[in-house]
Image 1 (tube, rainbow, N blue to C red):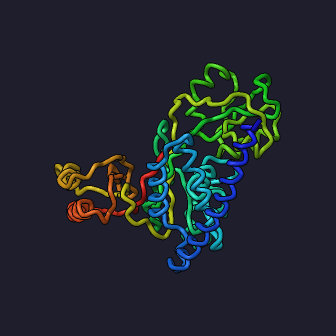
Image 2: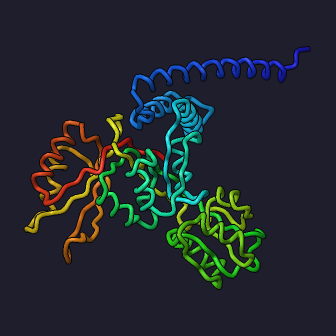
Image 3: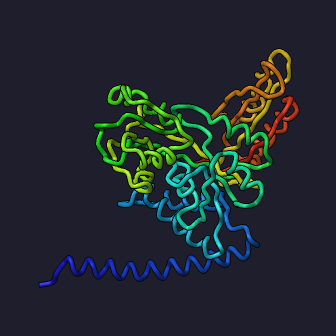
Length: 354
C-alpha cells in the first residue's frame, strides 16, 4: 500500500529542486539588470511594483504579508550579488528602526546603527551610507519633530515609506513582575503604554532613555529594572518577556521614511511630501490648498510646525497622493509654487503598506 505522506514529501522535494533552479535563474537575470542600470542597485519604485503585482496574483494559502516578506528577502539577496547597499538607521541593534530597515531592504543589506536621527542624516549626506531609515510619525503619539527639522534642513530626499505595526513588550532579566522598581524606554513608548503601566506598575519609576534598545541594554545590567522594547531587543540583550502587546492602542503603527540622495520614480501608487509656508495675507492658507483641490489631488496629511524665522510663523508639512510627475500633481505643484512664500518638495516615493 502506497504511503500518502511519502508521496507528498516526494512532491515537495521535487518542487524545492525546481524553486532553487528558478531562484538562481532569477538572480542571474537580476545581475544582468544591475549591470544595465549602471550601478543603481536599488529602485524603490520597481520593487514596489513587483511586490504589488505578486500580492495581486496570490491565491493562498500563503498570506499576502508572508509572500511579501519572502520576495523582499529574494530581492535583497539578489541585490547583495552586486555588493549590496548600506543602510543607516536609528540604533542600537534591536530598535523598531532596525525592524523597519529590514522590512524595506531585507536581511542582506548592510545595516549601520547610528546613535541619533541626526547621525543617520549625516551618514547618508556624507555618502557613508546609501540610504537611511528614520521614524517620522506614530499613529498614537504624533510626529517626530527632529526628523521633520532635518528633512527641511538637508538636501536629502524621501525615496520610500515603511509602515511598521508596533507591539511593545515588557522585559527584564528575571521575566517576573515582582521586584521591578524602574521601567525604562523611549519617551514615546512610555506614552504608548501609559494606561497599561498605570494599571499594573503604578509604583514603578518611569525613566525615558534615547531608544527602546538602549533601555533593554540597561535593563540587562540592572535586576530591579524592566524595559519596554521589541521582542527582537529581548533576544539581542538576553532578557525574558514579562508581558507582550502592552501598547494601549492595538493598531499602534509607526511610519518611517527612507532617505537618500534621490527620490523614486513613479510606481503607480505613490505619495509626495512637501513643506511650505504661507504669505502673510488674509486667506493665504486657503489659497495654498486650492491648487490641490482644483486638480483632484488628495491630501493625506497636514501638520504645522513653528518656523525658526520668527515668532508665530509656521511651516506646513503636507503629504499628498500621487507622484510629482503625474500631470495633475505636477500642475498643482506649479501653482503651489506661485502662491507659497516657501515650498520644498521632499520627494515622491511608493506608498507603504502595513
